[in-house]
Amino acid sequence: TDWEIKEQDGEKRLEKCYKFSNFMKALAFTQKVGEEAENQGHHPALLTEWGKVTVTWWTHDIGGLHQNDFVMAAKTDKISEQLVK
Amino acid sequence: TDWEIKEQDGEKRLEKCYKFSNFMKALAFTQKVGEEAENQGHHPALLTEWGKVTVTWWTHDIGGLHQNDFVMAAKTDKISEQLVK
Image (tube, rainbow over the protein chains, first blue to last red):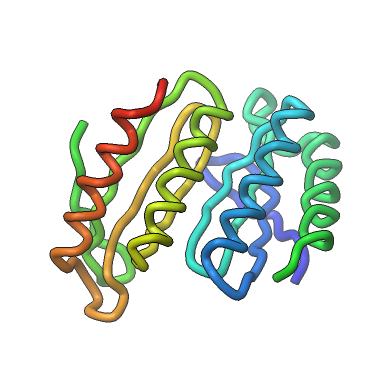
């Protein structure tokens, strides 16, 4: 699956769900994406559950999507490719 | 605030939002709660955002709340007390 544009609270957001074979692999992904977010100074919502992480990017200041959100989405995909699912 | 019982997808769930002063403190809490969940073999939903983590406990097998969810909620509070907000 690819990134979906979803509307929440009147704001457009980029959202994607990544699947993993257990909880700890999902948690490790959350940690990696969180660290990269901190490095880039742009922070997502990360919903960690058993076997999956739902990542959401948006730019609160403009009430929607900025180019940076798409850049971070691509970085998130790259992190996902480097991890064992 | 305390734990709230919320209904989602027809299942009762325990939910609480913990506040932090930045993203990395929130992420550290998610990691700690996730590790404890793995140790106990019972896994929550952890929504990590800038400055807050929403923790949700429920028992999917019974479609609602089990004693174990309340035990894990108490453990989550204990972890929160040990961290810098």
